[in-house]
Image (cartoon, rainbow, N blue to C red; front, side, top):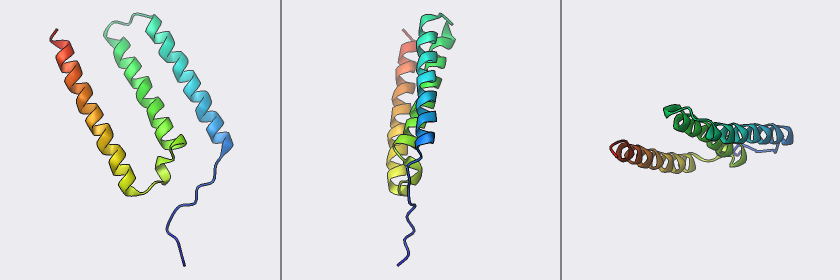
Length: 95
């Protein structure tokens, strides 16, 4: 019997590097929150948050090694979150 599933073995060095990257991105987020960049403050915070969520999804939640159906579910959830943000900021810009 051959299995087409990927075998996942934890790589602790990779986990530590990603954890350090997440800590550095958190420091960047806190630093940017204290500085007024005008319109770029929100864009910078959302970009950093997107990078952090990508790292968590792919490394710690093992999204790379999951089945296609699970990846589709995550993609649909992210799609609806993006739609919610677009509608929120569209409403926010007309205030």
